[in-house]
Length: 128
Image (tube, rainbow, N blue to C red; front, side, top):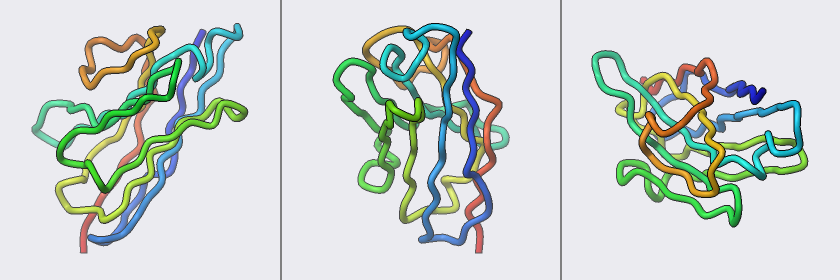
């Protein structure tokens, strides 16, 4: 079974940077970042969960929400079975609980209901 564990969240000032990690593990070779598309999502209090970014399993194609383009970068380290989200130029509106998710498809998406596996989340707070 695929397991996802997020880490790297915390408190940061506006304009600062933070790197989130999504460590994955499974019981078969297919249950790795090479066989699953991985997405990052976030949810602020009182708001719906929104897609932030994803990376495809086959060709590492990436995509980003308009609100984070140019500031966030998603990447994958297959040897470590880990996906990262580098967040730069952080704004207060980036505050929220960040989750990584996986689905056994080549292509990712920014729609949360299309993912089967989820981590527990890591809190990101951007405040002066």
